[in-house]
Image (cartoon, rainbow, N blue to C red):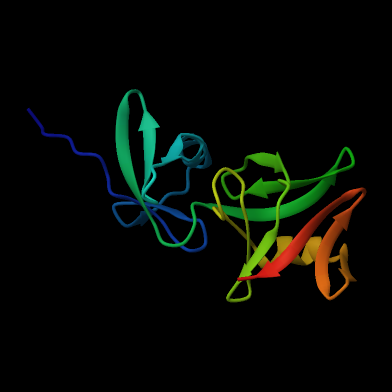
Length: 144
């Protein structure tokens, strides 16, 4: 009887998923994995699937925003796994000139350059601080 083992799963700094070092391209599997990704209290990630936990190594953050669009009067982000969410409330944090937001956990999502450029079309400055403003909602852009 073969002894099956789970593949080593890895998410690189650009949000690309790998299994045993091979780039994953099946969007449905990536979406399934990403939707079942959990974080423990020690910044470790794992897929929780059918009462099994599968560890996932994460180079930077687990989620990556491909694009930002306006839908029904709200700013909507699309992750590289295809899922769409409203841009969450909270700050946009700049770390080494790379923008991050908090989608599910603290600072767990990186914005692509095109998505951040799209947001910056709504950039305003007030009292020495920068904000992304859309309608009545504002997101502070802060450096850490």
